[in-house]
Length: 227
Image 1 (tube, rainbow, N blue to C red):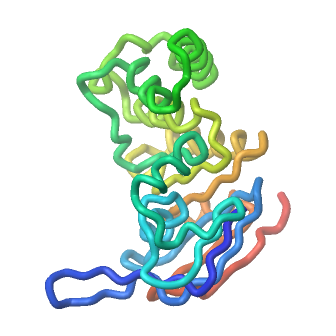
Image 2: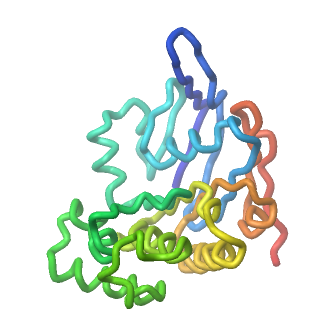
């Protein structure tokens, strides 16, 4: 599904250059559940952004579903990403002026999905995640766990082949964090590829494969023992 070949990414801040990723080689097959770990500043979020077509490498190749997308324009990447990749962030990134229903529906408004189908799909997704009764509420009226459920619903409603999660439990207490992890396992069991950045060793252990980054390079790429 995905393949990086010799990928490097350099960030510029004035005259200072920082190598975020250094000649990364990586392949991820459809249906895998991959955890990315490592200390702060090692390149985890940069790698996730590249995998999700939110950024492009300075050098190397990125093969996404059979196409080398390195060097593509932002507009072309947006078109390719739409409906194929879902994102979950630590900060939820919900729009306060919109209701729960409208926040989730927003993910479908750029896909050409007819209004009636959008309403049906959003309703079904909210019901699946146990938040249908909060459909008319604003994000500030929800608990942190409920807000993350809304963010997951928004990421999944278009039926993406790949779900990217950047510290999805970072702003949650233990109980709600465990709930999100169960949802990710269920999503993966249904066939969706999941790639998650996490600082939690226990959460990383729930993935089927773990990548450990250090100084912009993959230093460990290990399959987990089956539970």
